[in-house]
Amino acid sequence: MNDLYSRHRRVLPDWLALYYDDPIEITHGEGRYVWDSAGRRYLDFFGGILTTLTAHALPEVTKAVSEQAGRIIHSSTLYLDRPMIELAERVAQLSGIPDARVFFTTSGTEANDTALLLATTYRRSNTVLAMRNSYHGRSFSAIGITGNRGWSPTSLSPLQTMYVHGGVRTRGPFAGLDDRAFIDACVADLKDVLGHTRPPAALIAEPVQGVGGFTSPPDGLYAAFREVLNAYGILWIADEVQTGWGRTGDHFWGWQAHARNGPPDIVTFAKGIGNGMSIGGVVARAEIMNCLDANSISTFGGTQVTMAAGLANLAYLLEHDLQGNARRVGGLLIERLRAVAAQLPGVREVRGRGLMIGVELARPDTDEADPQALAAVLEAAREGGLLIGKGGGHDTTALRITPPLSLTVAEAEEGAAILEHALRSTY
Image 1 (spheres, rainbow, N blue to C red):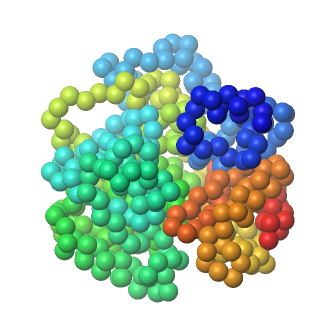
Image 2: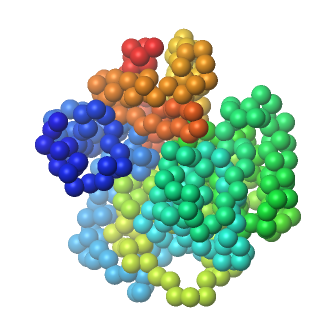
């Protein structure tokens, strides 16, 4: 056991997870690569849990952070904050929500907390609809709406949560249906749930479930849900913490795959916008955002140095069409991995869109989760010089692949070759 790992175990919680049997310390990065404290280079296919959206050590972002830090780092929201206002203007315009207001937080968890506060206050209801297999953060209220047992350490909650079907296409009671019938069945389930509860405040849903293994419904499910929600006045919260900013390639926001009945009432975001800096936030219609009748500020949300990073990162993302690159390179990577999966009995499915790719593993010739194989593939990929993530939900195990959106075709092929070797060495 290395010394840093021993020190970690002495002073940090047992439940603070670490990857790998011999955990690594990442000391620096550049582009799509990172290096550990032993000088070993890795191709980064996880991006600090989807936070490194554009590239490691992106000069435009590091320059903006350095220049802002040389002026002032922080003053709180009690004073006018030019970078915060400028980023809010950009986010409001990009959100698709009419008359949008933006509130910045320090994380996706805090963003979802804020969205729940807004929705329950606006609707005067503490009942919330959420998706099975979902994950929305590690705070007390976010855990209360998380439909993933592996990430839910308590059943205590200030909210009454009802879980509905639809977030996982290839499992559950509707898995054998075609897409249209699947959506119809999920809508019928939603209507049935609403017949058994008091009027909920909101439905919160990830367009692509992140921690759950990058599962998603057929396009249009949430648009169909919206028709039912609108009839009851129930708000739709789109948790875009992992899907936002063009990562899915086809759309800038994940909700746009379900846009037939308009944008969500509330959108939450975080992770990639800061390219590693702590930025989260909420976008909502003014009447919803302004419904609070007590004082509220943020000490660290919207701080000048993080907003400078967000502005520079967003500008780079848009100017270099990284959404288009995610669509093109991600499409090639998905097809490459599907060709490999077709030859391996332990790969149940390769799914995703853009550079948000899940590889579900199962015991050969079954639908049962295979955590031992998952751990083995993760270790073999690291040994080969590739960092990837993992996830899953009820009896599922999946690899999570989310490189920076500037990934090149050559780097995609390099990573696919390493992952193919790791999979073949396991199965």
